[in-house]
Amino acid sequence: MNDNNEALKGYRGRARQCLSEWKVTVWSDVRIVNTAGSVFEGVILPRSENFDDLHLVLKQKTGYNVGIHVDRVSSIEELGYKKAVYKIPEKEFPSDPALPNVTLLGTGGTIASRLDYRTGAVIPAFTPGELYGAVPELADIANLTTKKIFGVFSENMGWPQYAALAQAIGDEIEAGADGIVIGHGTDTMGHTAAVLSFMVQQSPVPIVLVGSQRSSDRPSSDAALNLIHAVKAAGYGSIAEVQICMFGPTSDQYGLLHRGTRCRKMHSSYRSTFRTIGAIPLCRVSRDEFQPLTDDYLRRDPARQIQIDPVYDDNVTIVYYYPGMKPNLIEALVDKGYRGIVIAGTGLGHVNKPLYPALKKAVEKGVHVVMTVQTLWGYAQMYVYDTGRDLLDAGVVPLDNMIPETALMKLGWVLGHTDDHGEVLRMMRQPINCEITEREPHNGYLVLQGGLPETEDFVKGHWK
Ligand code: ASP
Image 1 (spheres, rainbow, N blue to C red):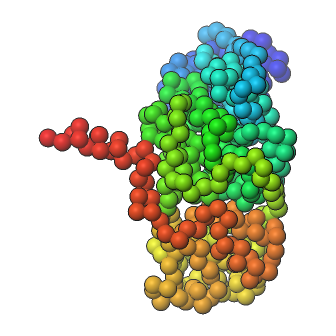
Image 2 (cartoon, rainbow, N blue to C red; image 1 turned 135 degrees about the horizontal axis):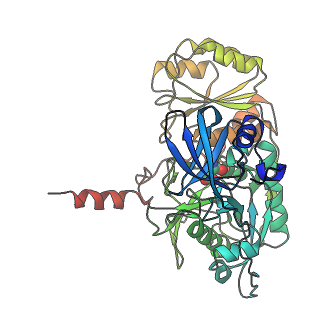
Image 3 (tube, rainbow, N blue to C red; image 1 turned 135 degrees about the vertical axis):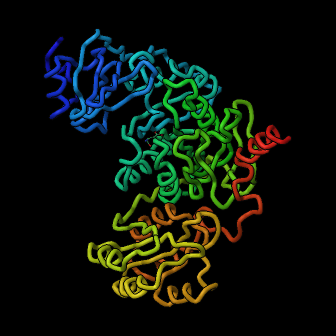
């Protein structure tokens, strides 16, 4: 065993101690027996970004990673040593004056990395050359410039990152980019798309967020196709809004472009995870064509002047109501200095009676409290029941069909401008890009989103 610091790369504390005790290192091919007698075989991977100091991570022969708690290790036997090759073949990204210039801004997430097939180690694949090596088709679509802004999984995005990203988008567009692609983890891509819709307005060109649900070591990875669709939408698409581009159906027939203020991740593992809520998606995109699903969007117009407004107050939160919630939760938020509370209420926008006085007091103390619905589809309609009216009387303001995360992002952005209650509510209720719509289209409930035709095929296949 090569027992030096470098060989235990990234391992800290007890995990590091465990590797040393059993005289194995990162890249050792091992057989681990746990305290229950189960046997795991595979290669010990380097510590990843979010790794604690209590687990060893093993790339198994099946291709899946497993984390083994150091307390459950009963023995480790070294079978060999398989060091990963970190380098992706870099090819020079060709430049063609006939193609549009697209800038890819990287923030991290699965899309920003490529896994080494043999070991499963994550390799950053981000320079133009690396991307060209991984997805050569991109060079036929656009001249791609890449810039890494952050390298984080998306739960680590936050207000300072949103502001920096908005600024970077503005700089690239001012410098003449024909379109922007933002590589982003999918988990919080909806939050980022929403906040960018407020911080970046009147864009002359498309701004397209893209990610991947499955890492590129899996044959079913959506990384390459999503990237191809996104670069196409950024370079040639006519929709100059902040939008999300991800798989439409579960199969790889086409991608969907979703409006940034109305989009949400709806499945933890399906590739077709993003869905437009309370509206229809903007467009279908495939390698060869765009199929617009609406004509209600901001058109590409190189003459338009972009507006970057990256202000925020991060003292905002969502309260996802549940039966039995106690008023001291609201009181604690007020005591801790929260300035804005988005409630995701039940049904048409309800919470239990014991919360009313606490909410009333919060409003009296100048906290801005708004109501959204946890059904996601539909409107907060607080005039329907007495209970809703009581909440209105307490000063809780309904946000119609704004989705809760979009409301949170908008409230943080609005509070960066003003703390005046009347002005906050006016700005919250005045839509900037369809975050509130007058009505939901009859086909807005998951129709046209790649789901239903597949369901019909499935049902037909089982019809006797
Ligand atoms: N957890 C990852 C993230 O959101 C998942 C992904 O990249 O899709 O960053």
